Length: 141
Length: 141
Image (cartoon, rainbow over all chains, first blue to last red; front, top):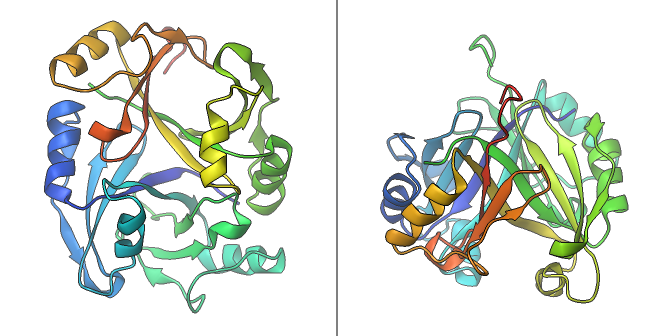
């Protein structure tokens, strides 16, 4: 089922500070422009690596799901891992049939890459919050 | 400086249970054979994805550095992110000059892929424990 490791989601209290860290300290050269995703309560920015990405995630708004994570991890930290799947609904149904817990309503939302996404509860995933993202089609991925 | 995202390190109380999770629940098809790294106090197993890897890490021995992580995260969870660099000593010296804290003596050890590795303290890395690994040479990476 799972394909490419699309990105690692890294929560941060400040995308600006994290961009400076990845650019100036770690020497990343391809860093996108931050953008808001109000429906998900986050502001995000992608750091492109040759084979994958780091998704920097900052809380957006008082109801952001990232506030709780940052309360426990004030400096930020690894928040989730995103794997690509070919068909999000088929993946969801197969995982549910095997006993996994899909977060929220279970209806996919459109993620930062413009394709449908879902999250799987970490309790059944070895403590790892897993995002599944339908692979972008026709982009050479 | 940083190149490929070589792997995401995932700590687990049981590699056997995590292998079953990635194989049977998530449908990963290329999973290596677990092996011990006594000098580092860990037993590891790599799950191969098309573009990167998940490194499952289980404590090995009473002094394993993974015990503390599992005490805080009994189900396991994301432990570190590993980026490849061309030259580990040049990367170390540049990071130190910029104020990063290299863990341990600062002398690279040989990692699970047979090349030198170092870890950077998460306090300066946005709460993320970062492993740097010298890129394997001559293997088409």
